Length: 211
Image (cartoon, rainbow, N blue to C red; front, side, top):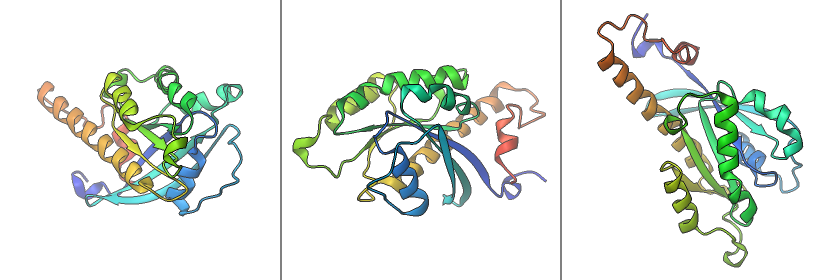
């Protein structure tokens, strides 16, 4: 079978990166289970949850990986970077140092995931904990958006796992950006190949569809 009718579901590996304490686990649990635990502990190593969702009449299964943010767990988390389809770079708006770490997280991911072109990969910058009072905020939206612009025009969204603000929107945005990049790559492939024998030439498409 070929064509859209054969693409019943698409499995996407989504990895959430950021310093410890920025709310990565809380974002994942709010999105998957609509649950928030104000006393959740730091992740040790990695953990993941699955979530099915529908966007523009397409079904997706998101395999969401939450990684430990502490440096001592680096050797545990980096092997899981390979095969990722989306990376969500996360910081807390009341933690300036977590914002300053975004570049390190992006570089670490690009290196260990072994992607060929980091500028063509679907990164999303997530500013979490916008439920805090304005006086406790250490990173302004303007500052964050400027950083995103300087680092490849990365998409940006502000969230609160605690108050369920924009959490679903963030994951929907990530999948939509992935879909757009995939469509552009397919279009380039069609224009560059005189005869395109195998549409699954990169291996990822084959794993993605028809689950």
